[in-house]
Structures are given as C-alpha cells and as structure tokens.
Amino acid sequence: MKKYPTDKEIEEEVDYFLEHLDELAAKQQAERKAYFENSANAERIARTRQRLAIAEQLYKATHKRRRCMK
Image 1 (spheres, rainbow, N blue to C red):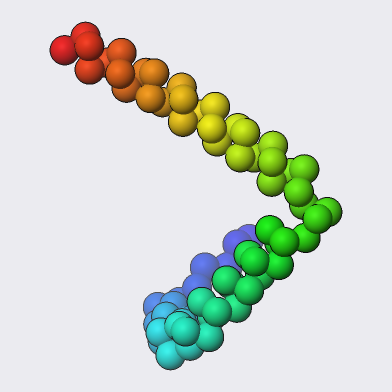
Image 2 (image 1 turned 90 degrees about the vertical axis):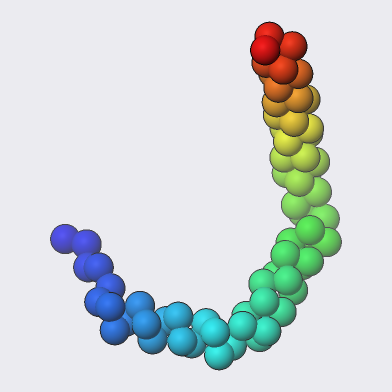
C-alpha cells in the first residue's frame, strides 16, 4: 500500500526547499549542464530536439488552421 506524506512531512519538505533554494537550483543546473555536455547523450538530445521541432510545426499548422476557420 502506498504511503502518503502527512501534512507535517510536506511542510518540512517545503521548508527545506525554501531554505536551500539557491543550493538546489545550482545543483540542478550543474546536472543539466553535465547531461547536455556529455557526448554520450548527443544522439538522444538531437532526436529529442528534432521531435520537439516537428511537434512545434504541427502545433503551428493546426493553430493557423483553427484561426482561419473562425
């Protein structure tokens, strides 16, 4: 059975997050930078960017079509 956090646990987690916001943000940024600079991830990143570009073009085409229909 899944254990759900209590209100006190959630409050403690939020307090910790707020107290260490800059530290946690810097850690996340360093992890993202390391991921994107790792050559082992280059192919995956390129595929993801290609998929995002396709999705953006599909969105724009659909959005443009909907504006024309109004």
